[in-house]
Image 1 (spheres, helix red, strand yellow):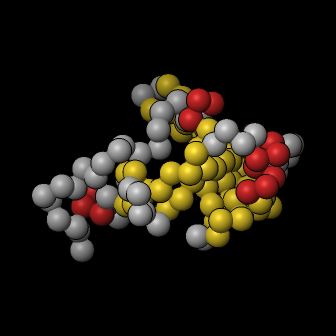
Image 2: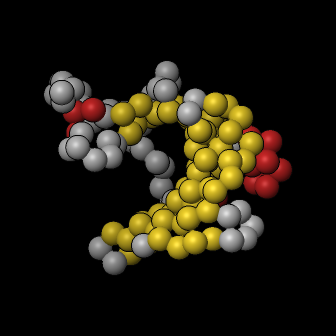
Length: 119
């Protein structure tokens, strides 16, 4: 389900439902915020987490991700509050989405061990 959000951060809120239960939400911002804006709004108690894609699980849609120290996908996470902030295009300063979830975004390891990447 999607909703238009006007205040306090304009954008589109995507609500994810799994088996009739709220699984998470993602606010895709109309105007990119900066890392400084996010720290001002949510505070400085975040961690930076890197992710990579689990390519062997690619089914032609979205590819699952896993935590990887050198992964190209970088987020600011406020894990105790269920907030993950996505950086735009490898730019440490621009934010394009805020996710709200009750769990970590991706597992701590790849599920592709020994499977090889899909082509």
